[in-house]
Length: 266
Image (cartoon, rainbow, N blue to C red; front, side, top):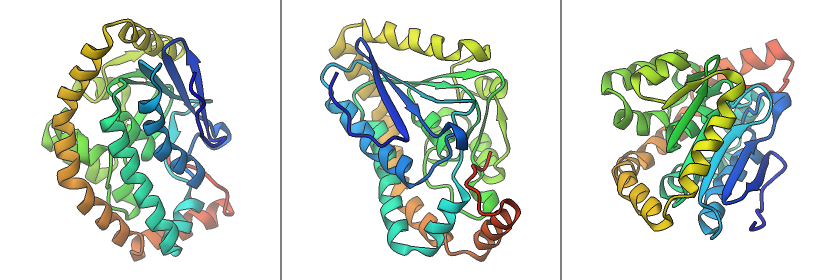
């Protein structure tokens, strides 16, 4: 397997032509910090360049897929303009990297997928979800513009009305509801979600390579147009929202309640 340059917050292993990627902050429910976010930004171009890779399984270590963003990380982004600029650039790279990746990405949503976790699910090609898991994009609820993932891709996956409802309210979407409206492909017993996702990835990896990759490209041209039409405005708007008084109040309230402890927003 090609050697991957990733931080400790990500694990990449090989199962034949399948690359298994695990978000690796289990003690923090795989909540996003700077290292994980930066690692994801650099990951998908490496997968794309891995000539032996034919499919990817994306999952989380521990009991969550990814429980949103650390409030301490959000605090850093709200107060440090240079770090925020860097992070927004990484956010763009995550979205465009997943959309352009030649290798099909199969998500194994083993637990809550919130914020960036929800975005990673929305940008995956096929999604298997544990029956106890849920999706949620709480950006707006805490005072941020929802710039990537759901608002960019959901209108292609579900009705525009439903996309608006879940993006604007941040309501949780249980697994069965997510499957019913088209956000995920399959709901599985909790203990089977990874195995089912891996079996799907292995099946795809055994199919004719050029046919798989070009077919994914044809399908994702629709998604790429939507991404390129909206992403720059969305990221600029999210940048502005990081200095909103509503976000500041929510960060202060959370940090005071939890003593500054890093925790996700699930």
